[in-house]
Image 1: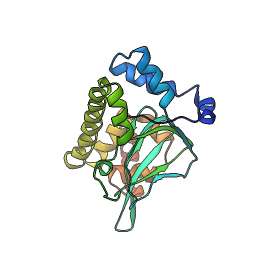
Image 2 (image 1 turned 60 degrees about the vertical axis):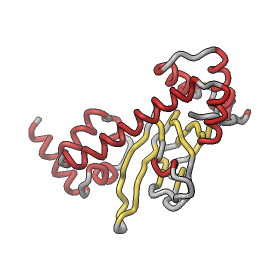
Image 3 (image 1 turned 30 degrees about the vertical axis):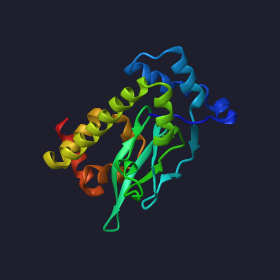
Length: 208
């Protein structure tokens, strides 16, 4: 899915954590020594500071990211309001649907909520990897299917669940998010205003 270049400076800095991508792949499939070597040598590891944007709305964007460390928030601006559409944390892929539509500007913004380290790649470099190791094309397809299935589930929840249910689901599946992002972003993610989120939390607290 991903094939890039790693500078010596980044390699020296990121050596302790860049093996997370290899570990991730090994959870999905077996890798030969040659595949591990090529992946390790070809990673393009990028570092961003809190507040940096990976993508802004309107940009042409075709990159894919794998988070090694940090947190990225995806959001849109609708009717002048900042609305969170996703949170990405360690060992998650950021694959925007817009990224597969040639010459179509992104509808989304991606901003780092913490100092963030990730591996970056794109379709052109992925194809070069597939030619060298065809096995990775199958792995790539499996990853993309899983990512889009998760996004579909998230979209469906906005139709089938109320804000309280979405809050409880987020608390159950990703409890660490609540200590890492402002409550305003949690509120827009579940589809309510901050004061409504406070009422939901008080209501749930009284039930405990």
